[in-house]
Length: 242
Image 1: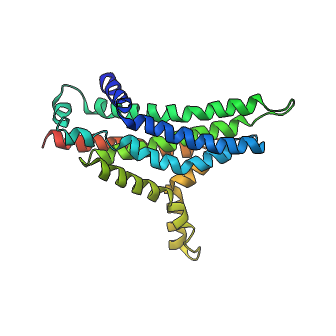
Image 2: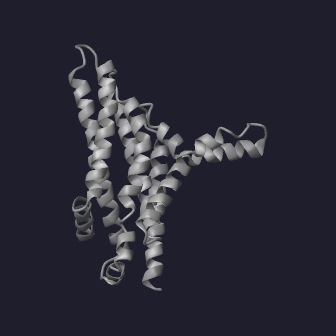
Image 3: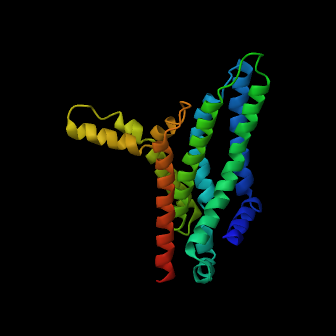
Protein backbone atom coordinates (compact mmCIF):
# COMPACT_ATOMS: atom_id res chain seq x y z
CA UNK A 1 0.00 0.00 0.00
CA UNK A 2 2.82 2.42 0.79
CA UNK A 3 4.19 2.13 -2.76
CA UNK A 4 0.78 2.99 -4.24
CA UNK A 5 0.37 5.83 -1.76
CA UNK A 6 3.77 7.37 -2.58
CA UNK A 7 3.21 6.99 -6.30
CA UNK A 8 -0.20 8.69 -6.21
CA UNK A 9 0.93 11.44 -3.87
CA UNK A 10 3.88 12.19 -6.14
CA UNK A 11 1.56 12.22 -9.16
CA UNK A 12 -0.47 15.06 -7.64
CA UNK A 13 2.59 17.30 -7.60
CA UNK A 14 4.18 16.24 -10.88
CA UNK A 15 1.02 17.56 -12.55
CA UNK A 16 -0.95 20.79 -12.02
CA UNK A 17 -3.76 19.05 -10.11
CA UNK A 18 -2.23 19.14 -6.63
CA UNK A 19 -1.11 22.75 -6.95
CA UNK A 20 -4.46 23.80 -8.44
CA UNK A 21 -6.35 22.30 -5.51
CA UNK A 22 -4.12 23.98 -2.94
CA UNK A 23 -4.32 27.33 -4.75
CA UNK A 24 -8.12 27.17 -4.93
CA UNK A 25 -8.47 26.32 -1.25
CA UNK A 26 -5.83 28.77 0.00
CA UNK A 27 -6.98 31.65 -2.18
CA UNK A 28 -10.68 31.53 -1.36
CA UNK A 29 -10.29 30.61 2.30
CA UNK A 30 -7.72 33.42 2.65
CA UNK A 31 -10.10 35.83 0.95
CA UNK A 32 -12.95 34.95 3.31
CA UNK A 33 -10.65 35.00 6.33
CA UNK A 34 -9.18 38.42 5.52
CA UNK A 35 -12.69 39.84 5.20
CA UNK A 36 -13.67 38.47 8.62
CA UNK A 37 -10.37 39.55 10.15
CA UNK A 38 -10.91 43.15 9.01
CA UNK A 39 -14.36 43.09 10.58
CA UNK A 40 -12.94 41.79 13.86
CA UNK A 41 -15.03 38.59 13.85
CA UNK A 42 -13.42 36.22 16.41
CA UNK A 43 -14.27 32.86 14.83
CA UNK A 44 -13.99 31.04 11.52
CA UNK A 45 -17.56 29.77 11.26
CA UNK A 46 -18.32 31.94 8.23
CA UNK A 47 -15.11 30.80 6.52
CA UNK A 48 -16.01 27.14 6.99
CA UNK A 49 -19.56 27.78 5.75
CA UNK A 50 -18.25 29.63 2.69
CA UNK A 51 -15.74 26.87 1.87
CA UNK A 52 -18.45 24.18 1.84
CA UNK A 53 -19.12 24.75 -1.86
CA UNK A 54 -15.42 24.64 -2.70
CA UNK A 55 -15.01 21.25 -1.02
CA UNK A 56 -17.71 19.98 -3.38
CA UNK A 57 -15.59 21.22 -6.30
CA UNK A 58 -12.23 20.05 -4.95
CA UNK A 59 -13.27 16.44 -4.36
CA UNK A 60 -13.87 15.68 -8.08
CA UNK A 61 -10.53 17.27 -8.98
CA UNK A 62 -8.79 15.08 -6.42
CA UNK A 63 -10.33 11.83 -7.57
CA UNK A 64 -11.03 12.17 -11.30
CA UNK A 65 -7.72 10.62 -12.37
CA UNK A 66 -7.15 8.00 -9.66
CA UNK A 67 -8.42 5.02 -11.64
CA UNK A 68 -9.59 6.70 -14.85
CA UNK A 69 -6.04 7.60 -15.86
CA UNK A 70 -4.83 4.04 -15.27
CA UNK A 71 -7.67 2.71 -17.43
CA UNK A 72 -6.97 5.22 -20.20
CA UNK A 73 -3.27 4.35 -20.27
CA UNK A 74 -4.04 0.61 -19.87
CA UNK A 75 -1.82 0.47 -16.78
CA UNK A 76 -4.77 -0.74 -14.71
CA UNK A 77 -3.99 -4.25 -15.93
CA UNK A 78 -0.67 -4.07 -14.12
CA UNK A 79 -2.41 -3.12 -10.89
CA UNK A 80 -5.05 -5.81 -11.24
CA UNK A 81 -2.53 -8.56 -11.97
CA UNK A 82 0.14 -7.45 -9.51
CA UNK A 83 0.69 -9.59 -6.40
CA UNK A 84 -0.97 -7.01 -4.16
CA UNK A 85 -4.37 -7.00 -2.54
CA UNK A 86 -7.00 -4.77 -4.11
CA UNK A 87 -7.73 -3.17 -0.75
CA UNK A 88 -4.12 -1.99 -0.63
CA UNK A 89 -4.45 -0.42 -4.08
CA UNK A 90 -7.71 1.32 -3.19
CA UNK A 91 -6.56 2.54 0.21
CA UNK A 92 -3.23 3.74 -1.17
CA UNK A 93 -5.02 5.95 -3.69
CA UNK A 94 -7.62 7.05 -1.13
CA UNK A 95 -5.02 8.06 1.46
CA UNK A 96 -3.02 10.00 -1.14
CA UNK A 97 -6.10 12.05 -2.04
CA UNK A 98 -6.95 12.56 1.63
CA UNK A 99 -3.38 13.72 2.33
CA UNK A 100 -3.65 16.47 -0.29
CA UNK A 101 -7.07 17.45 1.05
CA UNK A 102 -5.81 17.55 4.64
CA UNK A 103 -2.85 19.66 3.52
CA UNK A 104 -5.27 22.17 2.05
CA UNK A 105 -7.36 22.14 5.23
CA UNK A 106 -4.27 22.76 7.37
CA UNK A 107 -4.45 26.47 6.54
CA UNK A 108 -7.58 26.68 8.69
CA UNK A 109 -5.46 25.90 11.76
CA UNK A 110 -3.16 28.78 10.83
CA UNK A 111 -6.13 31.14 10.60
CA UNK A 112 -7.36 30.00 14.01
CA UNK A 113 -3.94 30.58 15.55
CA UNK A 114 -3.87 34.10 14.08
CA UNK A 115 -7.27 34.91 15.56
CA UNK A 116 -6.24 33.43 18.91
CA UNK A 117 -3.04 35.50 19.01
CA UNK A 118 -4.78 38.84 18.45
CA UNK A 119 -7.66 38.33 20.87
CA UNK A 120 -7.80 41.02 23.56
CA UNK A 121 -6.75 40.11 27.08
CA UNK A 122 -9.47 38.22 28.92
CA UNK A 123 -11.17 37.04 25.71
CA UNK A 124 -10.77 33.65 24.09
CA UNK A 125 -11.83 31.80 20.97
CA UNK A 126 -14.21 28.84 21.08
CA UNK A 127 -11.92 25.97 20.23
CA UNK A 128 -14.68 23.34 20.46
CA UNK A 129 -16.64 25.02 17.68
CA UNK A 130 -13.47 25.23 15.58
CA UNK A 131 -12.64 21.55 16.17
CA UNK A 132 -16.21 20.60 15.30
CA UNK A 133 -16.07 22.53 12.03
CA UNK A 134 -12.63 21.12 11.20
CA UNK A 135 -13.66 17.52 11.88
CA UNK A 136 -16.91 18.00 10.01
CA UNK A 137 -15.16 19.39 6.94
CA UNK A 138 -12.59 16.60 7.01
CA UNK A 139 -15.20 13.83 7.26
CA UNK A 140 -17.37 15.51 4.63
CA UNK A 141 -14.37 15.62 2.30
CA UNK A 142 -13.50 12.00 3.12
CA UNK A 143 -16.98 10.84 2.07
CA UNK A 144 -16.82 12.84 -1.18
CA UNK A 145 -13.33 11.55 -1.98
CA UNK A 146 -14.47 7.95 -1.43
CA UNK A 147 -17.45 8.64 -3.72
CA UNK A 148 -15.15 10.08 -6.38
CA UNK A 149 -12.81 7.12 -6.07
CA UNK A 150 -15.71 4.79 -6.81
CA UNK A 151 -16.85 6.83 -9.82
CA UNK A 152 -13.27 6.94 -11.14
CA UNK A 153 -13.15 3.13 -11.06
CA UNK A 154 -16.19 3.00 -13.37
CA UNK A 155 -14.89 5.07 -16.29
CA UNK A 156 -11.70 5.82 -18.18
CA UNK A 157 -12.70 9.43 -18.81
CA UNK A 158 -11.47 11.93 -16.24
CA UNK A 159 -14.08 14.43 -17.39
CA UNK A 160 -16.93 11.96 -16.94
CA UNK A 161 -15.55 10.98 -13.54
CA UNK A 162 -15.31 14.61 -12.39
CA UNK A 163 -18.76 15.59 -13.69
CA UNK A 164 -20.49 12.55 -12.18
CA UNK A 165 -18.74 13.02 -8.83
CA UNK A 166 -19.65 16.71 -8.80
CA UNK A 167 -23.25 15.97 -9.69
CA UNK A 168 -23.68 13.27 -7.04
CA UNK A 169 -21.92 15.39 -4.43
CA UNK A 170 -24.28 18.28 -5.04
CA UNK A 171 -27.19 15.85 -5.10
CA UNK A 172 -26.36 14.38 -1.68
CA UNK A 173 -25.81 17.86 -0.29
CA UNK A 174 -29.07 19.28 -1.64
CA UNK A 175 -31.26 16.53 -0.19
CA UNK A 176 -32.05 18.77 2.79
CA UNK A 177 -33.32 21.48 0.42
CA UNK A 178 -35.54 18.91 -1.29
CA UNK A 179 -36.74 17.63 2.08
CA UNK A 180 -37.78 21.12 3.16
CA UNK A 181 -40.08 21.31 0.13
CA UNK A 182 -42.08 18.30 1.30
CA UNK A 183 -45.14 19.31 3.36
CA UNK A 184 -45.59 17.76 6.78
CA UNK A 185 -49.11 16.50 6.09
CA UNK A 186 -49.19 12.73 6.58
CA UNK A 187 -47.09 9.75 7.60
CA UNK A 188 -45.71 9.08 4.11
CA UNK A 189 -44.56 12.67 3.52
CA UNK A 190 -43.07 12.92 7.00
CA UNK A 191 -41.16 9.66 6.55
CA UNK A 192 -39.84 10.76 3.15
CA UNK A 193 -38.83 14.13 4.58
CA UNK A 194 -37.00 12.60 7.55
CA UNK A 195 -35.26 10.07 5.29
CA UNK A 196 -33.94 12.77 2.99
CA UNK A 197 -32.75 14.85 5.93
CA UNK A 198 -31.02 11.78 7.39
CA UNK A 199 -29.16 11.19 4.11
CA UNK A 200 -28.31 14.84 3.44
CA UNK A 201 -24.58 15.58 3.60
CA UNK A 202 -25.19 19.25 4.33
CA UNK A 203 -27.55 18.42 7.18
CA UNK A 204 -24.98 16.06 8.69
CA UNK A 205 -22.23 18.63 8.24
CA UNK A 206 -24.35 21.21 10.07
CA UNK A 207 -24.32 18.91 13.08
CA UNK A 208 -20.62 19.65 13.60
CA UNK A 209 -21.10 23.41 13.81
CA UNK A 210 -22.48 23.58 17.35
CA UNK A 211 -19.30 22.65 19.22
CA UNK A 212 -20.92 19.43 20.48
CA UNK A 213 -19.70 16.33 18.64
CA UNK A 214 -22.49 14.03 17.50
CA UNK A 215 -21.20 10.49 17.15
CA UNK A 216 -24.07 9.68 14.80
CA UNK A 217 -22.83 12.26 12.29
CA UNK A 218 -19.26 10.97 12.59
CA UNK A 219 -20.43 7.39 12.05
CA UNK A 220 -22.54 8.49 9.07
CA UNK A 221 -19.67 10.03 7.11
CA UNK A 222 -17.25 7.23 8.00
CA UNK A 223 -19.83 4.63 6.96
CA UNK A 224 -20.56 6.38 3.66
CA UNK A 225 -16.85 6.53 2.92
CA UNK A 226 -16.31 2.86 3.74
CA UNK A 227 -19.32 1.82 1.64
CA UNK A 228 -17.83 3.48 -1.44
CA UNK A 229 -14.42 1.95 -0.67
CA UNK A 230 -16.02 -1.51 -0.56
CA UNK A 231 -17.91 -0.80 -3.80
CA UNK A 232 -14.66 0.28 -5.48
CA UNK A 233 -12.95 -2.93 -4.41
CA UNK A 234 -15.92 -4.92 -5.75
CA UNK A 235 -15.70 -3.16 -9.14
CA UNK A 236 -11.98 -3.84 -9.42
CA UNK A 237 -12.39 -7.44 -8.27
CA UNK A 238 -14.96 -8.02 -10.98
CA UNK A 239 -12.58 -6.60 -13.59
CA UNK A 240 -9.73 -8.73 -12.28
CA UNK A 241 -11.69 -11.92 -12.94
CA UNK A 242 -13.40 -10.73 -16.12
